[in-house]
Image 1 (cartoon, helix red, strand yellow):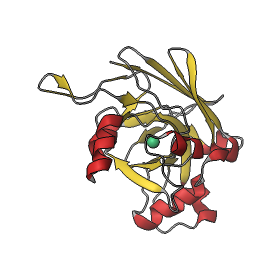
Image 2 (cartoon, helix red, strand yellow):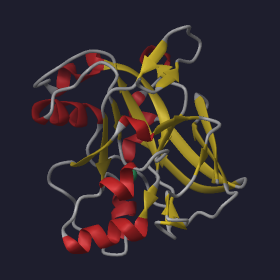
Image 3 (cartoon, helix red, strand yellow):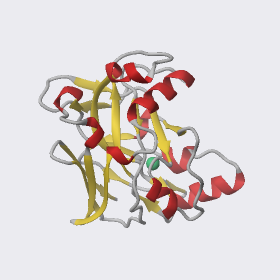
Image 4 (cartoon, rainbow, N blue to C red):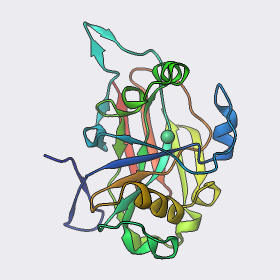
Length: 226
Ligand code: MG
């Protein structure tokens, strides 16, 4: 059974299919990383399983094996999420808008110590980025309710304090480019989500932290760390 998300001001339900994620899509975030990197020439793309998706109100925990958490460095990445409404392959950028069902605010929760190790050893990011609950997503707001997609503000508060803020205009690769790129490599299906990358402001989370993310004036997401 696929996870589902509510659609704001609608009785429709959005069934989640594939979850694509883009890394290194904001300059200030590239600079804040432990090992700062060059600006990528194409979108850095990875996937999460759709079991990573949980709705607002969820409690997210670091996975535990044999009684021991597998990481001691869970971090926040707050990202605009694009929800795909129809199937498409080799989509040209100018037509990308036709495939967008709506938008949401999401968290690309990351086990940073595991990711750093994976990078060092040339291993995949699946555990660091795809564990259960690693992709909390708000209700979806339909595309036609967004006044200006190129100028969407978003932010994250942790325990009430502002910790991340960004604007869709600051993306290195804009949403139409991401849709075109992913559709040329993988194809896109109704129900797919695209996490579009985090601005600066990543930090280590602690148990009981409350994270409130907002696509400003449009939709909110609230989760707690367990
Ligand atoms: Mg991310």
